[in-house]
Amino acid sequence: MHDTYKKFMEKTILVTGGAGYIGSHTVLELLQHNYRVVVIDKSCRYQINNPRAVYFQCDIAHSQALKAICARYPIDAVIHCAAYIQVGESITNPAGYYDNNVVKTAQFLETMRTLSIARMVFSSSAAVYGYPQTLPITEQHPCAPVNPYGQTKRIVEQMLHDYHGAYGLEYIALRYFNAAGGYPEYQLGERHQPETHLIPLVLQAALENRPCTIFGSNYPTPDGTCVRDYVHVRDIARAHRLALEYFDQPTGLKAEIFNLGTARGFSVLEIIQAVEALLQKKLSLHYAPARTGDPAYLIADATHAARRLGWQPMHSDIMTIVSSALQILVTQYQHNFDIVYQLQR
Image (tube, rainbow, N blue to C red):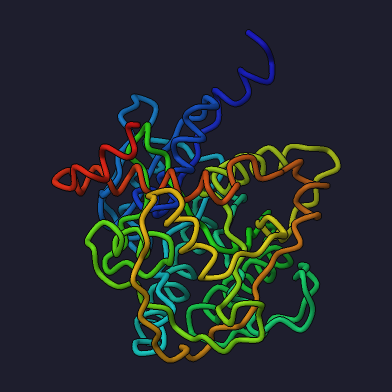
């Protein structure tokens, strides 16, 4: 057996939040590259049918349960995806976000230390940057989160930095820009309750023949709507795997932060136009006031990930992203035969 293949076969990765949107795609990516995977999640929305993955419905703060799981499945590294992720909800319920995203992560890090698990890949966010001062945004851009969600991600990054200095924790924080798309062949996609991401919201409006809401029309952008950098969730999943491999490289640093994006922005109206082109259907638009904390532009500079991880987005063409998201949603709208027919043509 090839040595590299054998090395990966022997590795067992714990994925927190592995039944969620990004976590489930990451689990699949790891399985496709012959890792063993242990998932802990408070729910079990997505389960990959593979004998090399085991799922436990468990909170990351339940140290005794985690110790029992890790006694049965010795863990080589952790991918930490478990978190609350809704920006608006974080503003109305900051206590819940600081408890779930920060306090419980602190408890989880202590459990990891007790178990001598010394490597973590952390799901961070471009929300740590706040309003961009320069574009595209590099990892050296000042961090000034404008909502509690972004603040929780920034605090955990600082915790990882401190644990690295004091205890030797090796970590990589991946700052996602706008994760989007899905993996229709495995029925993996976005299932947020409630849904807050633009692409599935536009698709839902199209499938249900109702107006699509646009928040803000006077931003300093070419068409007046927000511009975002959309990166396919499969590309994000691959970055997690490359981060694990990076730990083993002789030249790999043991505490790193990487942006994940495409360096290309699309406005809200451009996303709507992509959906209209895909469905050959004109959408009705409803304009609402801009939301607090929404920057005009968020575009990544991901050259650091390209140079150090060897990561490049492979599935992040906007039509590929929208099409993959649509195929997932269509399975939930089988009554809409016109849409199904258009997809099959």
